[in-house]
Length: 297
Image (cartoon, rainbow, N blue to C red):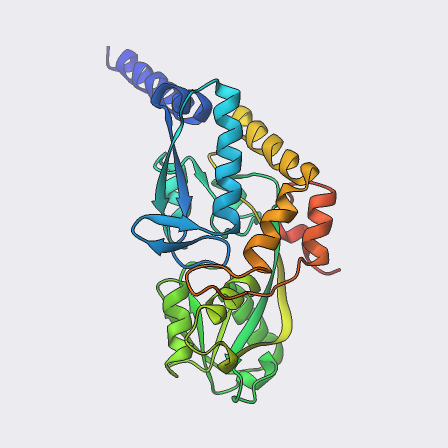
């Protein structure tokens, strides 16, 4: 009897997992989708009062509109769920977030826990410093305090470069990107190492943008993509199909121009980050390759 109950429990657990993995059915039954967004990323950020904007946020809204049409729904409610670098993967895994479109790097380790849609942005990890600091490369960070955001891949690149160049710096961690930039802005850190788009966005939104600059070597090239639960082929196919449509129609390029080359809220400033050759290449040949495939040979 106990054995039968155990087998039944396992089967029920498997069934529950299968239901959770069918995101399209979940959306159709509930009439809603939970979208994971960021509060202070370069690709997704908040204006306050529950309003989330940015290149990846608006792109996700376009994708969700396509999904709504595909499901034949008159209305599909978007429930915006703020996520952080630390909790974004668990929230996708446990079903709290159906689609996460913040600024997440697609890498081999994360692919063990979640799936990724096709790459929509290729990021370059750089250094931000005060314009009068004299810092122009990572080799000049010896004895300095370097800010980065807890739970991000930039920490790994810092450690690699510390070993490679014999540079001895102290890492200080912000709980999110805004907090990390505040460490730099307030002088509690000498530099901030992070995705170039995040550095550019935080500089553009600062009180005195001219006080900061992005400097030094490209520390890493990373494909950024939306996350979804593993083993949900139908949902991934639908999301990827919408992304390909946005690229093919030219809408993706228009969205990029809107959020990186034109004045944006809240301060009506321009980030001024032209579309990179790496991102153009990713759009020309849509794929979901991890960052390990981008590593320099």
